[in-house]
Every structure is written in structure tokens, then in C-alpha cells.
Length: 219
Image 1 (cartoon, rainbow, N blue to C red):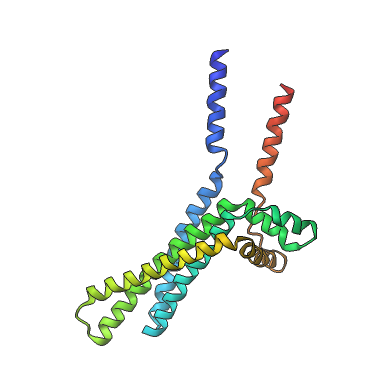
Image 2: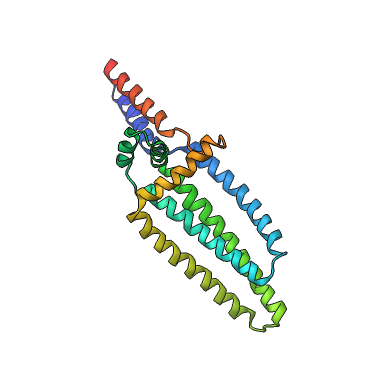
């Protein structure tokens, strides 16, 4: 009997450790990030070759602010509460349903926004900065390319960190508004384009919990 209890306790501990993690999502997002990073890097390099210095710098700024924008969304989803959106759903506001889905899928959503988009934008911005430096050195014959490279890296890093710091403050203080507007975009993608990016992850967990409770009572 003691061995059976120990085995049950070990299984329960494993379920507690791994049950809160969606290992399928972890595997999928790892593979998708690998493929996206390759595709985005190839596309960005091919586009950058046909741009002048001003256009390349504008593209660099866009990439940096895109990473900041998605980082703000990821923080807002992780920091928000779904209770205000339940009252909106009771008043038949369509966006509230998608806002609740965003919050209930906060882990995958914040992982995609903060990590996937953030890391890829960091890679692309680094490549864009290198391209701008080589263009400057080649066009104007600048000798101190190393100094320009250090200054460009410092500029991109400071702009990214400062932008994300501002975005985090905005996401924490205005999380409900941010999620409401994001839920509008998600709703349009689902209803107009037929793209559902938010699977019902939490419902499966609720079913498992109810099944566990039934099993306990029957025992």
C-alpha cells in the first residue's frame, strides 16, 4: 500500500509540474520560430540590398518599433484581468469574447509577442544596422567603421530598451484598452478572414479538472 501511495504521489507531482505547461505549444513555437527567423532574415536581406541609406534607416526604425509594439501587447495580456470583459460580454459586446480568449491564452500570446516577434525583430534590426554601416563606409569612404558599428549598435539597443520601457508602463496602466483594441483585430481576422489564432486551450484544462473531481468523488 505504501508503494502504491508513493507512486501516486510521484504521478501527482509530475502532473503538477508539467500539467500547467502546454508542451505542444512549446514544440510548435520552437519550430515556427526557427522557420520564421530564416524566412524573415532572407526576405529582409533581399529587400535591404535594393534600398538606399535613408530607406534602410527608415526600415530599421520600423522594425525596432514593431518589436516594441508587440512587446507592449504581450505585457498587456499578461498583466490584465478578465473580469471587466465578462461584464462587457454580458452586455453583448462582441470584442469581449475575444478579449477573454486573449487573457486565457496569456502564456502563448505573450510568448509569441514578447519572445518570437521580439527576437526576430532584434535579429533583423541587427542585420539592417550592419547593412547601413557597410553602405556608409562604402559610399563616403569612412575609415573608422568599427566606431560607426559601435555607435549604431548602441543606438539600436538604447532605442529598443527605451521603447520597451515606455511600452511596459503603457501596458500595465492601460492594459484593458490595449486588449480591447487587439481583440477587435482578432475578431476581424476570425469573422472576416476565417483565421482563428486563439484556440480554446483553457476549456480542455477545465474538462480535465472536472474529470479529476468526478474520479475523486466516485472513489
